[in-house]
Length: 131
Image (cartoon, rainbow, N blue to C red; front, side, top):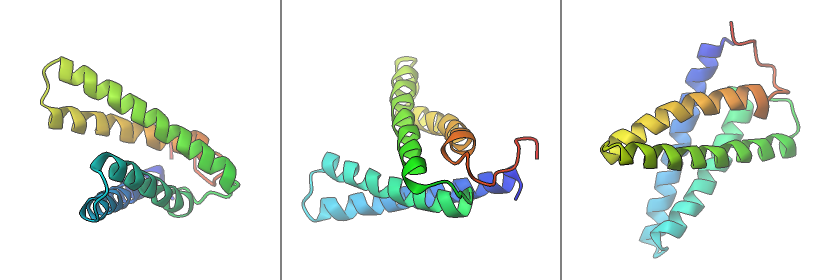
């Protein structure tokens, strides 16, 4: 599989995980859960789903689950921090919050894909970057 094909799968995986996050958030809030708690729980649902799909379908990883799951979670936490920093920075520069979020997300997709490809699932059968 080429890196381009793998990247498209990564985008699809992220889209499905994001949809699961939003649906879980909506369901929890409708059942009476406070929105911030619901979003936190939903983010964890998205994390587990995204990890599972990324491990098998995107990166075809053969590395052990505990190791790759810990690495995946570290990249996820780093992404949360980068997102918060980028959002705050862009808002301070006067960007509309939706434009700022889309910009931060676009940058994070590229960072996350490369971190997962080169580090999280480094035991996977992933082709070199130039292919």
